[in-house]
Image (tube, rainbow, N blue to C red; front, top):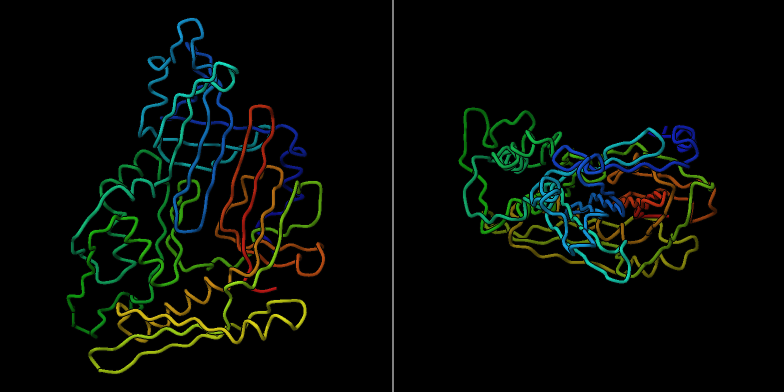
Length: 387
């Protein structure tokens, strides 16, 4: 059973007729400022389960004094200061949900003499990943396992401050395959090998992304909730989508360019002076007919990496590469009425659209767009490994 029912959302949001958008800056709503009557519009929020930062942009209208030719920065400085925390709610009628939490990363003062509506303060906000990209470290961590290393990084004071300021709500870190069950020392009972992990001239973000790629993990943020987990591990369908008036447009297609039938990962186990090789077959269905399978099956991808040290490492890397390649097959872009419940990192099933189009897709990106004119839409971007 799917986690959400779109028909129930249709009723909850009263047929999506009254879009609602609200932005809090430093915990305050700029539209409630009694001194300066501004409006927040053109909200765009993009959240993603891919290894990149989530971002939000919006405009503050009526923040320009046409008589003096000056922006009202002094009256609005508590709202537009760089680093100010940002919380964005979207929904309909009286129901709104948090879709983004982050901080102001960029402020632009945009003037257009031909149209007053284009003279705005334009804000760009980023989620926690933006801060993680800023530093650069070379140091030895306390952790022996990558999941513990990720936890150690996110336990630093910078991120605890973000937690105290409600930019981060929760952090969920799943154990990586290199960590034994129960966290027992890798060398056996009573042994504590010093296998501490190192950061080498890399940011916190680069390190966590490296760990995610090493073990086929995802690292992303949705509404202030950070997840570091096995890729596509939440297998419960988020929603079943049928043809309806809630769908505004879609583009669904399949492309075998770059697909391969087999992935091989090779390295050298220096300690044993032996070659390590892992092979993974692509068993997916690539086409409605029988023409595509022979073309794909004859192709292979060989990956050689000296940083891979064990058979288990090679196996993890092969799984990651094969999955990444396989999920290039099918793509989905669908724009619907605004639904804050649609989030990345989940599967959706399309039904009733006809052969091939009716399929299971993994949502990688969700883009919410809201305008003051009363339009709120949600675009989901996804991919499928098979038909």
